[in-house]
Length: 64
Length: 378
View (cartoon, rainbow over the protein chains, first blue to last red):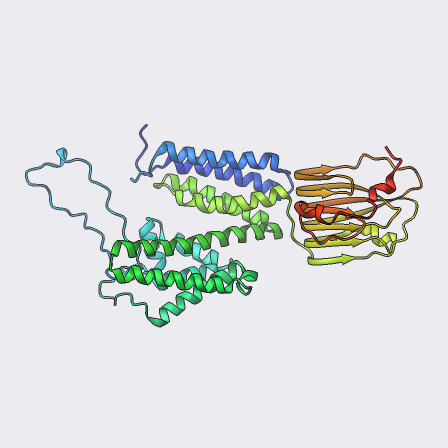
């Protein structure tokens, strides 16, 4: 897989994951959602796993 | 601590004799600059400039981080001062870093202040002696390493010191995010998480901004815990004992942020039938003392903790307990409507001093259970 110089796919994927996580937390704090442990723990594990996977698959950060 | 600044290698290396560019293998990455204070990119002491150069991060982001952390109990200021004390300058004309009495004293005071912010109740307890001994040992170790003159070891010691500072900053940020979320700032913390995500996405097209993953997780984890436990610490804190005397007072209920809530029902002249007692606590322990002859039914929502309603004990996360019993008409009954974020609920004929389900059995002997007053009900 080749990536454009200066483009870091891991940052992009991690950013999307963090945004989704932040939105869920925001909706919970705004009382739109009521996220309990049953859902929060898998969500956190999935977020951490996704970020680790993205960073691991793309390797060290590229510089353009 | 190295006395000599590390000047990054010049990229203008001479070409190999007779070799062309096309046959030369890819040049290795230049070594990362040593962690020093910058003499060229400096607003105050060159700390942010030096850290930014070392991590290859925009120093502005480092400066903003210091400013943000300054609102977390002054951690940013302390971290900056610690770096100012510990990091040497990259200026070759600057005097070598000399510890001396005042710099050593300053570093010690900064360490004590950082611990005082992180664990205020711990510092002035009997553990203060342990802290002082640990400080002396750490100081002696660093001096021994420095006197050996082994630059790589002293460099490692500096890295360890910086690591400790960063760890303290991280713990402080974690605690600040958790406290801020539990005290009503959850939306703001969630906004910061989203901002980190947007920064990551934007930074992906400019070489990457993976360093934002750390702050994002540092903010997300405590907020997630607060959200999952519905922890709301706004309200009264501390130990309170309520002794209602009228049914109206009882039915208004009690609401606390954190601490120990004790409700003594012995002075209430309960009428026949059911009386509801709403109890709400963010984190801590609720104890309800019930006089003989009164039936207690417990409805409880506990996000993380345990409930002992006089009949059974139940613990775990996301507890949603509804007492299924139907009491005979005319029985004096108190229906507890408990909303607890994190902690324990206990109902009994007296207050207990043991804390936590693991110790409840120690003082359970004697006294009729309030469940006995509900006898004869299904």
